[in-house]
Image 1 (cartoon, rainbow, N blue to C red):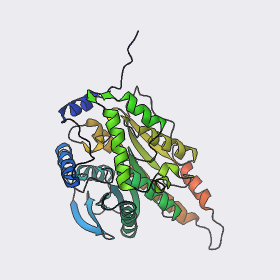
Image 2 (cartoon, helix red, strand yellow; image 1 turned 60 degrees about the horizontal axis):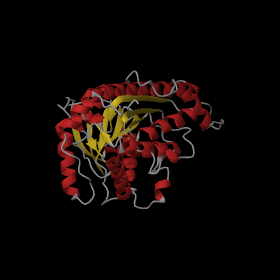
Image 3 (cartoon, helix red, strand yellow; image 1 turned 135 degrees about the vertical axis):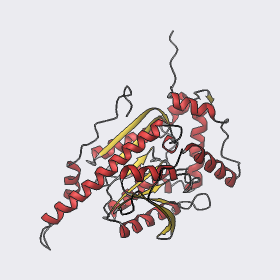
Length: 357
């Protein structure tokens, strides 16, 4: 009888996991100590910081932020929202990614230091993110939004709010995003079972599952509120008209299923979506530029997508200026969204696991 083969991490992931101290659960520990631990680890794995022309410490509508400019005269900006389960992370933790994205995309990057749970539960982080988007719209020509993990959750929620507010975003960059607060799902239950001893880490699946539940309790204590699309974007009634997306996922991530489902829904609603699924990878890898070559590749792909999206928006605006109908002529917002979507290649389904993105 053949013994089933369990999930297999990539060589770089295996080496990384073997270098870590045994996992300790979050609950029952001092929050300030945990934040310092997360901060120190992020700096240890982010690698050398890339050079940019300038870094400004600013208040983006009152939200503490850092503005990175790769050359100094950028007219477009990415608002970057760091991950950390809405409880951890800061501007130092995401500086490696912010600088790298600025250089790859050729745009300014506004990294925001939003308020953290549990001291500031929902909607504080979302409100800060939306405020930063408003500041970016007032100060730059074109705006994109992006984030990893819980930052990806906030980026997707902001993109939905932007659609409903008739605010144009060039792109939403979602890196292994949190998109659904529902814990009792087939994908999550299967993850607990399949990852019980992942790469020698005992109870890896169960610990991951319980950690997510702990973070949700801290960020949105009101379970009924978790059903709102601004908290769980996957629960939006429709994604029609939302900004184009690039979604980056990891094979060994408990959140992978909801990210792929979001991509399917975007495609169904005729929203351009590009997806890159990293075989053998784990949640959190894009921050680890110093120890994961996949992180470098993911930043490269994200930067290329941002460049194209900003260029496409410039083309759209030029075309719109030429073809703007007289005042009073009928304009259909839904038709406009469909027209924009048809000019980009739609998602063709997840890539084969035989070829890494």
